[in-house]
Image (tube, rainbow, N blue to C red):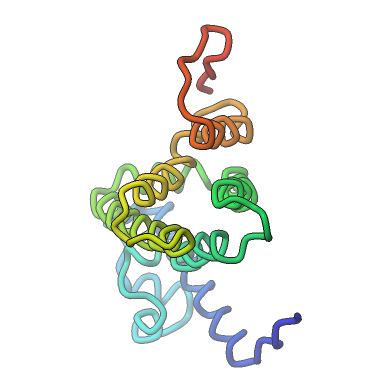
Length: 200
């Protein structure tokens, strides 16, 4: 089934949003998060401050401009998985397909430093993380026909969302993602000295 073509208005709206987000990230990386105002971002993107707020709720949302899409993609990975595919295998493939390309972005290290060194962004990321856990665990629970507060579903969602952070420092990130999902699938086993992964 093909999706209907995106209209010109929607394309223009998406392009404006992307231009604002790109300008914001460039300024944040150049000057530091606290030294950049919404007016600075609007000027750099050649839009009004009103336009900025039409697309984003605030400065923090400008840094994490794709998180809403990522959340919906996580849920879709669970709900729209192939027939016969397990929830864990679907989430494993989603992480490999969506997160690994991000780690190769040339600005990834700068972005991570920006978030880690800015208290407001760290706090926003933590709130966002909690929301993702709730949404993903609810999707998993729905697939299994159990209550949304089911501890097993909440725990699985939280561990899956931690996979990128756990794999980020490993030399072979793909192998690390697979190893973590193997633990989630098969259960934890005490590692031997030769099998312990090394950090980069």
